[in-house]
Structure formats: structure tokens, C-alpha cells
Image (cartoon, rainbow, N blue to C red; front, top):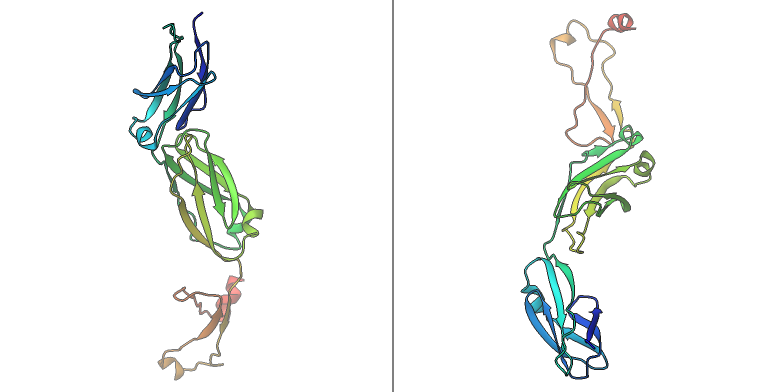
Length: 238
């Protein structure tokens, strides 16, 4: 009878398999990516260990794995074969722009966060974290987008909101995290005018008039617009 090699186990560093009709101490040759590794049969089982150095020396892509053995009489088993894909390149992920600010008007609408990838297969899951809450999307054609609802936006605390994106390729290689942020500010500021003269007469109008005031919740360098008009003009506008 011809001996048989009954399949190869999981391919990752240790390559194992079974035989039938092969005596103990017969030599198995397991070829991984063009390099032979040998082991001996014991109790119809065998295993070889492929070192990390040997794994790294194999070119990327589909790696063929074969196993050959003969019994003591010289009868050869039909070759067993399998393969795996060697992919060690890290993919990339990039986030598109987000608004600098989201205010109490903008949070009434949803926010779409989009981005691009390289080296990521279609249908891989992207996780976009916005203010501590995960949102997921799938990659299609090296692009993705997630929609953060108005309800979710409003549930985030005010201040600087961190946005991060993470993805792995089908081989499990992780992209370096992409990140950005926006400022969530939904509080209305206030503005107060200081006092002005009750009257400006034909002597006072020879000098300039300073109108001052104060604000709360308004950042430095924001522009204030002060409109001066007569009561008659105001009546006409009404």
C-alpha cells in the first residue's frame, strides 16, 4: 500500500501533519516558500518549526507549503499541499477635514466624517472614535465614511473633541492611527454695551465717540459689529 500524508495543520511557525502507513523515524520533507525543512514521523504525526528569520526571508504573497514522505520500503506518499498569504506591509489611514467648530446650530444636523486608506482590502472595518464613542464603517475602494447623528453629537461634552480612526488589513497589520479634532461649543455668548451720552450736540460732534462694552464667552480677536442709526431710520426699517 502507498503511504499517505493526511493533510497539513495550521501554517504559522510550527507546521504539523499526520501520516498513515509510514513507519516511525521516517523523514518528512516540508517545503515552505521554496525552502526545505525536515522532521521525523512518530506515531503517524510530525511537525517542523519554521523560524521567524526563515519566515521573514520568504517573499510576500501566496506561499506554497508542501510535504513529502516515503515509507521504509521506498513507496512515496502523494504530496500534501497548502498555502498561506504573507503580507507584512502596514496599511495607512487618513481622516478628511472636520469643522473647526460645531456650535449650537451645527449640532442640529449629523456630522459626516470621511477618509481614505491604502493597502486595505474592501469590506475591512474602520473604527472611528468621536469623543470616546466608536462608530464603524467598511472600506470600499480605499475610502470610508461614518455619520455621527445629531443626538450623538449633543451627547458629547463641550470642549475639544478628539476624533481617531483605526483599521487593520485582512492579514491583521494595523495602520498607524489617524487623528484630528474639533471644538464643540453650544453656549450662547453675551454682549453688553457701556454707557453713551444721552445727547450729542453740535459741539460734541466735533470729537470722536468711543463706544465700549463687555462680552462673556467670546474669544479674543472675534469681531464686534456696532451699528449706529437714528430713531427715524429705525422707524423706517420697521
